[in-house]
Image 1 (tube, rainbow, N blue to C red):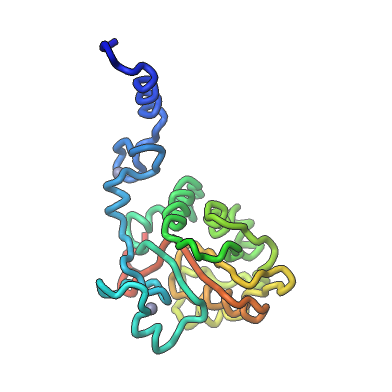
Image 2 (image 1 turned 45 degrees about the vertical axis):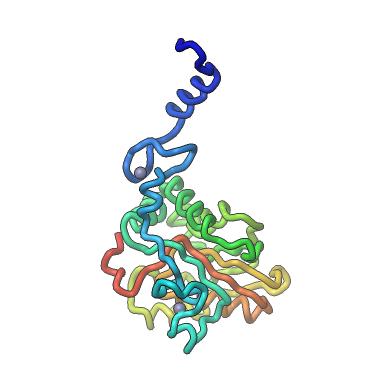
Length: 240
Ligand SMILES: [Zn+2]
Ligand SMILES: [Zn+2]
């Protein structure tokens, strides 16, 4: 025992060192109870600054202004938040979560998304539902797992997906849009005026457009959509 050393602090330090899992990406011990060390977190492919309409990166120095594309053709939702680009290592986390059932990867993705949601975000949270058959195959709804970690109240049963829809990772954009256009049905009796829709990854935005259209038909006034990550136009080949 070194004279003057605080025994309680020493024990706390040892305990923290033993308890803390290594950083998920580099294996170094992270600070506090974080899943990632500070360096790995900072090195993630953050989209900064993002367009508030489509989530794609804007030129630096234009925060909060929509991109030219969104000005010409405004998206159906009021705001899209997807803080990370779907490139490694984020794509690896999504793959581990969705395809291998690694729920810790899902929690990490959800926490990274939660940190990017502004305080004025709608508090009623609606995960994009999976069709019954998909749910049986996968065993869990990845959007619902993410939604559980976000601040707010998750709505259950307000949105149905009667059609199975295609695997969103296959096919071209036009076919995907046609397939999901009428895939969702919202129950107007169970929906508040402002809703935050949650998905796992924004790809072509076809799914989120179909969900937003269903919510609008059911009388929802304000729709925000979010996901931990989104693909970038030339990033598709980097997936997985
Ligand atoms: Zn690390
Ligand atoms: Zn945009």
